[in-house]
Image (cartoon, rainbow over all chains, first blue to last red; front, top):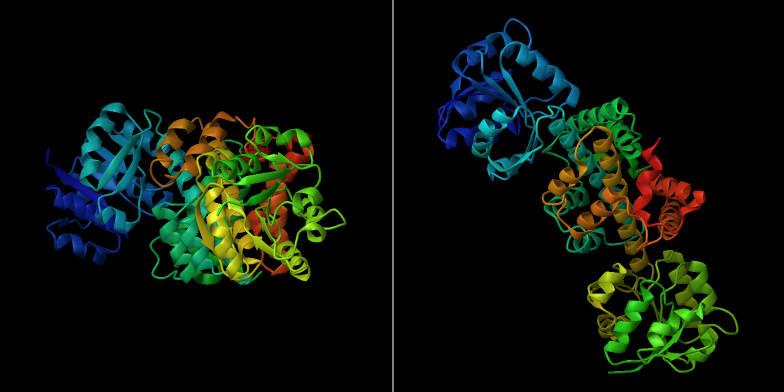
Amino acid sequence: MKQNIGFIGLGNLGTPIALNLIESGHTLYVYNRTSSKTKPLSEKGANVCESIAGLAKQCTTVFTMVSDDAALKSICEGEGGLLKNLEKDSVHISMSTILPETAAYLSSLHIQHGQYYLASPVFGRPEAATAKKLNYVISGEESIRRQAEPLLKDTGGLNVWDFGDSIVAANTVKLCGNFLIASALEAIGESINLANKSGIDADQMWNIFSQTLFNTPLYHNYSKIILEQKFEPAAFYMKLGLKDMNLVLQQAVTVNQSMPLAKLLQNNMKSIADSGRGNIDWSAVSTADKNK
Amino acid sequence: MKQNIGFIGLGNLGTPIALNLIESGHTLYVYNRTSSKTKPLSEKGANVCESIAGLAKQCTTVFTMVSDDAALKSICEGEGGLLKNLEKDSVHISMSTILPETAAYLSSLHIQHGQYYLASPVFGRPEAATAKKLNYVISGEESIRRQAEPLLKDTGGLNVWDFGDSIVAANTVKLCGNFLIASALEAIGESINLANKSGIDADQMWNIFSQTLFNTPLYHNYSKIILEQKFEPAAFYMKLGLKDMNLVLQQAVTVNQSMPLAKLLQNNMKSIADSGRGNIDWSAVSTADKNK
């Protein structure tokens, strides 16, 4: 069923996802803090809202795709936020990578307001959104999961992986996934550093690895970027990678689990972000070791 | 051309490789320090030799597949070793994972004796050998590479990847590959530890990851082993993984390259081996963090 849908957060990934919703026939109401970013959407027929409250009054389903926990909370809370301005029974589908605890907190606030919150973090770079090959991991109230699934397909979701009722499940899985990707980046980088310093043809070496042991698009694409040291323009910012490793380690502390590799990644990402390079691609993580 | 071929080192991987040579029609002469391990070969028609010197006198091509640099040196050196007992123009094809420097050292000794040494480390677990799906990385003198290639196919090699003249190249690539696999083990393990402690269904989580981002046999097989914590019987011993990480870091020191992830792996493997569990599978690496 085609509906009025709200979309908040038109960054690198949010924009192609929102465009997919328009292409699927939905009427879209969009809001972005930096209003210039609404332009590609308005050109395709989206209605640009000047406030979150204005958007909330038009829609009973709102997607959000923002950069961190604080941004998501600020969208929900306060006089002008979603909680106070969405109608009862409205659904907030949250695609951001956040702390599982934040999902639980926001879900409980929505419930207090007679609304629903669905945890729906997403795997995929912007080009995967355009190609409609995103992977969503969802968790939350069952009826809302059933209702959201076709909409998530309309956003460009190839698969929607259902983790059941527990509101914290989906974001935990998403954090594990981003940790795994970051681990691969560090490993690829260290192997290339060692090969280069040893006088080995690292291109040829990764040509083999990405045809044999590591034959996936993830390793193909990232080994290429790291071999070429082509970290700009970034598809995923170092500062966002660092944010994710911070969340992984916060979750690890919460459940009392040691994660030394996550800690290493956090340190390397922090050293690069602290040196003013937070806007290069997170695959530059191993350059922190390069000249040590 | 079918020839008399020598094979030294009948461990978990050496045995199926040697059996493939017999199946390919070669006449095999085998030697193993623990002589009982020659039995599966002699049952298939291999000639069991009582000494390395005895073997060397029968063959002008000798494969070796032993556990470490010291074992390989002891096979080559001394009155009873390959160097003193192989005829001129004989070829030693060395499949062990060793330090690149050791390959260069042994190659130069063979040259002094009018013989050839080919660096030919191999990727593949024992079941890959049986399935004839091994991947060899070779480097050394060109005419010897050409001569060895069909023989390596006969051992169960699906691919032979040629790294040219530099005798140190193949072993450096092999060390990078084993480092990458070990890195994946640590990352898989930490993700499963975090999921378990967070009350997430880690089986379901890895079912997704191994169908999407990490869709390779490596991740399928190892995530299963780590989810089940089924580290015995080992396909590749922790103590051998530790040896490989030691070699990686020795190479890193040689070329003045920092590898913090390799260091982490070395520490975790060492703590497990030191606790008397050197014979469990190396995929247990992340259990070092499990209860920290």
